[in-house]
Length: 287
Image 1 (cartoon, one colour):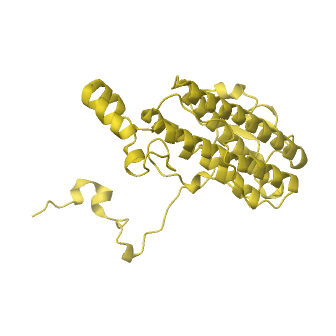
Image 2 (cartoon, one colour; image 1 turned 90 degrees about the vertical axis):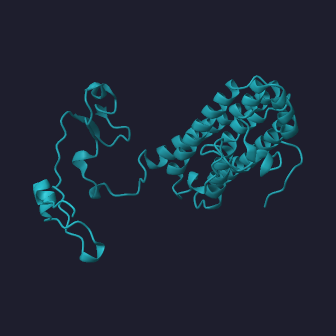
Image 3 (cartoon, one colour; image 1 turned 180 degrees about the horizontal axis):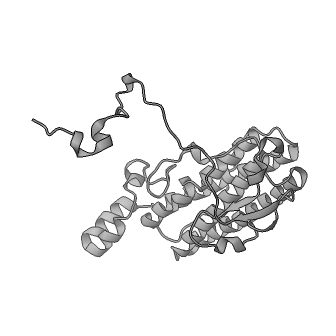
């Protein structure tokens, strides 16, 4: 059960409206690595969690906080859009340069959302549930969470650099700090699970079903051999269960693929077509 508090988790007060920046801010609200994505990802991971209750409680703690971040961003975007339609038209009529700048506003903010935020990214693409991961394997999920927080923090930092508004920067500085905490949180949880289960996911799959001769082989499939100097190509493997080896010229050991002809009802190209096998000699000009 959720209960809403009227106060925001932190202030979301721009110094002045900026409809163009409101469009940019949509990315960290409804983009692939935005707050809506981590909110839904964490909540479903928590609701589906069948592991130790400390993990379930932790996941739902952060998932619920992300609801607050969605609210903060939606509130900020709405205030950045204050007075946008009338003001923009008046200013644009006075100065063509101003009109060109204000042309970067998302028109749907006015037409569809009535000067409010929308569950879309900065290009207007609707938020998609396929952005979220809730696999039931906590180590796999927590690594996905760490990536989401890493990309999310990177985007918020970039947005911080794109504005000079003190109020906007104040809110973003809070989100940037929380993303740092969340990265640290997931790294701590990942380390705990790796110590208990091992580093490779899933840890429950039997090694006897793996091709062990390639399980720790780094294969050079591009020009140059600089990659051979990395720790991933030499020495003990990260999971502690093997030794990395570098293969300079990996060989192909599979078969040459030869597919059976398609059945007639598929109307494909017959494999023995003389025009295809012999060149133009077998192709008759049109009459």
